[in-house]
Each structure stands twice: as structure tokens, then as C-alpha cells.
Image (cartoon, rainbow over all chains, first blue to last red; front, top):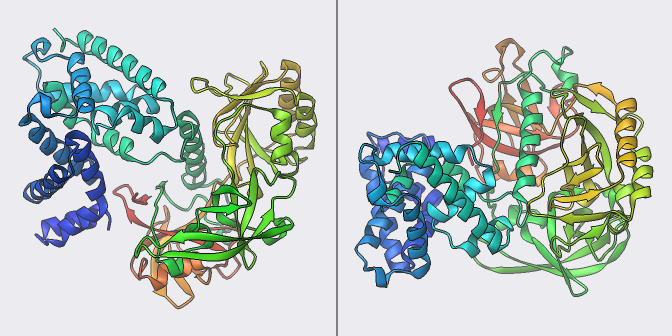
Length: 184
Length: 389
């Protein structure tokens, strides 16, 4: 069933909507949640929370891309759960990804006049100007939280190439945010 | 870590783009993107330029009838009984080597090479998890080494399989010999960088090009992850195909400085030939090329299913046409398993909008006999049709 059909089910408050969502996007939600939490049980609970979130959000929301909408909720739910875990309990790989991203724009450098949505728009604009492979590698790492090895396998790159691409992209993004007045 | 949370609000299309599976396992993204651009550019040229084809729609297909189509890769898993040999067995073992399927369309019977033997193909029903096996014939790809390519199938329905040993450096001469390139790979047309929107055919064939390339056999084809294809004004971008090698409308660039780049072997290969040889190829193309607007990647009929029979369906494209007066009802033969399963499994029903891909021509009485794929689409606000992922 396509996005429109599933959205129609949500608007009709038909619970089949959740089964269809699971059928289309379940594996991706599990993937994101697992990558962040590295625990199957926690990931399953996140997926369940995600469907509740989607059910409560649609209507009134009518997203253009259901995949982006659902994955965003899954990501947020997983991050929320991660925040309750102590740093020591977190998977070292995930912690490295979080730290790397945080170094691009540390909280203490964040221009308080800018909202998360403002910064997201700037990052979107920045990524849009990057080559597709650079953009996707960055998103796989810091949106989907894939490991470097998973990204290398996905795109047929060496791990060192992925690391170099990420390093260069983080540097460029930091500079871009500085120029845009977000990084103080 | 506010930036971690901010990342959740990135634009939808960027997230969806990164969520898409890569087009080919281990393929170079640079080349994947280039190939996709080529495909989309060609599709757009065919599907969005009304008036290029002034003749009757019957003889010339549906070019220019419809607004833009947004195609998508769909990977529907069919019930085992309705899967093709290629779909059931993505890999086959023959004489100790594992070959992977390269092209999901069967090779024409007159392209099959000699019978090499049989093997037991093994596959798993994704719905039930049941293991299946059956004996398939193994045939040679004419002119190619059995160490690289084979054809596998049964009852004349054979698919191209390849032993993929990764992106290894190889001389142009070895590649020509291992894959039988001069015999199998056809240069079907080209574009010239700097002359965007113009397409050329090679009515005199590609014998001259292969003759020149045979003088460059020692040139080393290499895979460099950071390399870019040959480019620059005057670079000729050939479209090349070899059904029996599973190569369909890939790119083969030749630039004046002697850089040659191609993705025919899946990875992005580049080699250097002498500038003189490169210029001979370019000169030949420019001299013998004939401008054409007959460029198509795939032929489509798009419309609403108005009747589903046991082995056919009727598709009315009136509501999809730019000019509704051009609307016609096509009778589409669905005896081919790849079409039949859409009807049997209820994937397509009356009232659905479908994009039907076909080979050959539409007959005088609007019958399409060689349809091989059908995707459900939906109407967009601008009147175009999109096929969801």
C-alpha cells in the first residue's frame, strides 16, 4: 500500500494503518532504534512507541513522506531512551557518533537565537550542496546511526574512505555553521 | 547535544534518499548517480516532450503522450510459484564457482551459447522459509569466459549470471577477451558534452570504435574510488548495451585527453588511451553519428485498468494524456509470468493506474504483446504519474 492509502487509513482511524506502517517501514524503524540502542528488546519497544506516536500525530498531520515522518519519530524515541542511559551503558560506537556530531556544534557554542528547526534547515541546505554519496554517508552515520563498517558495506567503500568523508564533511559543516552565525 | 536532535528535522527528501537501498551492491555511487541521471534524463526526454513524434501513436508508441513519470525501483516479492527462475535463484553454483544474477530479464533464445552442463540451483521461499532446488541448464555466454559469465535457466528461459571477484584492475585487452566485448557490446548512440539535449545514433555500427580500441589493449582499467568519469566539452558519452552480458544502457565516456570511463563492469572503471586514439573515436562518432530524437530507455503505456481478463488487461490512457483527445485503450497481453502474476495475485485491479513496460511495438489494433513489467502508480497534482517505491 502506498503512502496515500496508509494516510487515508489513519484519517479513517482504521487500525489497519499501523499494520500497513509496520509492513512498509517496520524494518527501517527497528534498524534505526537498534543502531542507537544496540538492544533488541529496547528497539522493539521503541518501534511500538513509534507507532503510537504516529497514530496520535496523524491526523492532523498529513506528511509528504511517511518514511521520513515515521523514521523521525523512531529516531527521537530511541534518542529519548538513550538519554536515560548513563554514558557508560551506551554502546561505544554510538557514543563516538554522538560525540563527533556534538563537536560540529557544541551546545555551549549554539547561538541561542536559533531553534533546532532553524539549524536543521541550514544543515539540509548544506547537505543538498554536497555530492549524493557524501550526503548519504553523512546521513547514514548521524541520522540512521549506522556503523562505519555498515556504511562501507552499503556503498562498497573502504572503511577508511568512509571515515575520511565523514571527517571532511563534519569540518565543512562546522565552518558553514560558523559562517551562518549559528556557531558562536 | 542539541545538534543530534536538530538532525531529526532535516528535509524529508534527504532522509528518504539516504534510506533508499544502493542501486547495486558494491557499485560506485558516483556511477550509480550518473547512470540514474542518464536514465531519468532519457525517460524525461521520452515522456515529457510532446510533439516530438508527429505520427500516429499506433506506430510510434506513446512518446510525448504523457506528462512526466516519476519512476521508482520497486522490489515486490512474489509468491514462489509466480517467481521467475532468476528471482528464485539469485546465485547458482557451477563447477565450484558461485555466480550471482546480473540481469532479471531472460536472454533471447538466439543469444544462448553452448550447453555446458547442469547444476542444482537452490533457493528459499521468502514467505515460508522453505528451501527449494531444481536442476537448471548452464550455458556459455558467446565469446565470454565461463570463468566470468554464464547463463542459467531452463526451458529456454535463461538469465545472465556473473562471477564477481570485486573491483580488480585489468587491461582493456583482458576485459575485451574475458567478456567478449567486441562481439557482444554494442555502442548504440551517444551524446556530446556541451551539446545537451541532442542525441545521436551510429547507423554505421561500432566496428570502427572496436578497431581503435583494439589498438589500446595494454591500457589498464582501474577502479579509483575518488576518480571521476571522463568529462569536459567534447567528451562523447556513448550508451552501450549487451543483453547477453546483462548490460543495459550503461555509459562509456571518451574524452579528448584520452580518458575513458565506463560502468559496464558495475564498478567505475577508468583508463587512459592515447589522446590520438581517443580523438579518432570521437571523430568517428561525430562524422558518422546521425541526430535522432528516437531515444528511449524503456517504452511505457500508462493508464487506468478498465478490464482484467485471465490473460490480458485493457488500459485506457485518456485521463493520463496531456491531450485527452489522444486517449486510447490498449489491449495488453498478460500471458508472460511477469504480467500474469499481477492479475493472479491481485496486485493490479480494475480502476488502478498502471505503468506497463513493454518491448517491441504496439500493433495496429493497439495490442501490446511483449509487456514484461507492470507497476501501480498514482496521479500527482500536476497530472503526472508517480510510481511509489
